[in-house]
Length: 489
Image (cartoon, rainbow, N blue to C red):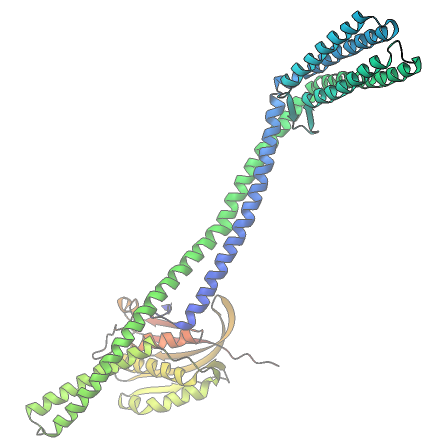
């Protein structure tokens, strides 16, 4: 059964920074995509709202809009004869200079002025804007204002003409005043004609809309429905394909970073405690060595002192290993050739393996090279060979080999060198495999349980991974997967 070693449970400074960078990149990607998705949904929503408004207005034309032609016709029907009557009355007065004609002009002009004031007050709210394929704005109040302004100018010229046409004045002056009055009256008649034309245009629009409004209503309703369906489909698709995976990755990354930060704090605290324990252990061992000199060899007291010294040595070894696990040294990376490294480790272990009748052999590596700290890799290999020898106990074979391969490292394919330590021991039980790399877990008597944890951390600091394959009764193979040296031609 092949197993890939997970990242060590102790903090690894070389891993926290890439994970933090990945978290920042995922968060940035998620933010950018959410903003883009929001803008797309906003555009769809705006289009849907506009379509909805058009459908609503097409479906229910305001009553004011339907009665608007009558309003324009009423203004034109009242204004045109009124201006004609005023002109006739003013002309008679200028001809006969009869006071009664002037009084009739004054009375009629006041009636028209009062009518305009009432129309202006009632037309303040008469402003309709239809959001159709062509935008139409109707504002009767503006037309009444324009008529009122022209009418005020008309009255000024009419009074001036009446004064200028007194019996003592020359006739030419009166003719000039009447020309100005006629000019202003033509403006008022033109505005009345404009009101009539506007009413007729609205009538034509309403008459023609009866044929194409129902069709436009159905088209807009269908477009609104399609926009809503498309928006929901796009949102669901984007969330499932992009937002959900990004959120999951971000949550996992944040969880890993948070766990690493907690472990880093715990590791610093535990490392400080371990360091403080180590100092008095050194003093105790020194005093025990002095005390041992005063004891007779072979006595019970001397044997007790030996036991105490062995336990102190074991405790000191645990503290040393733990400090190395909590504060790993940064690897000094350099190109390393696999076969010489394996042969150096073999020479170190050859005497011990001979005493246990274990054959320790190295297979040819064919010049495989990788990038690593050779001393730290030697430490990892020593730990794996020692574990292999302990599992065999007596009579067996340990094989060291190196081979080139292509594996996935840090979520991308890469050329690698695989260093393998294979033994013919009994294999690793399933219940032990789950806790194999837990700190302080050991199946060996007197073991610290930190050897494999340190080895896994060293390999991870080299941007590699530690794997093992085991079968009960057939042995175990540990594989150190490291980035190969990039050779440039």
